[in-house]
Length: 280
Image (cartoon, rainbow, N blue to C red):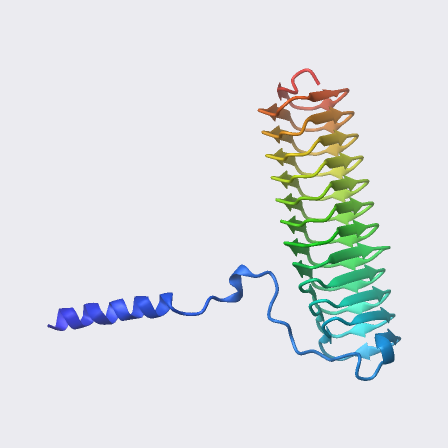
């Protein structure tokens, strides 16, 4: 009887655990925080030369413009809202929610910039992000233009175009399952560039990439030209055609199972040229 009682108790614990509500582990963003509402003291949400000593939350469906503003916490852009943040400082993260937009121009962000189902995320004009730029299931464009990201640039399952131009990315550039066109150009990348299962056209042009460059299972045309790569360049099972020209590659150039057309030439390769790229 005692054994039966223990078995029933153990089963009850398992069932209770299975019935617990799901945590936010599957979501990139936390629940919308209740930060300071800037519309309370600032007409039309135009804010200039102000310091907020806590988190700030842009209310739903509100358009705000901040200039030379300091936020001593996180900034949350609520669903349907937009924030243009010019030349200020954020001592935390930037969270961009459903159908919301953020435009960080010349701003300094001490944490991450994160969007989920967002309508647009732009980091531009000498902005600095100490953490990552991460967007999942975005509906609009993602742009990192003439700016620095000390972490990674990670964009997954996003519909709009992705543009990384004249940027400094100390970590990796990882772009997966996106539907829009992708351009990575004139950028320094301290880690790897990984592009997998994307549907639009891809251009990786005139970059310095210290790690590896990997393209796998992409559907659009791929142009890889005039890059300096410290590791390998690998193209596998891409379907939209591949062009590999004028690259300086310290490691290997490896191409396999890519659908025609595939073309290339004038690549300086320190290791081996293999597979479909053996003559390039």
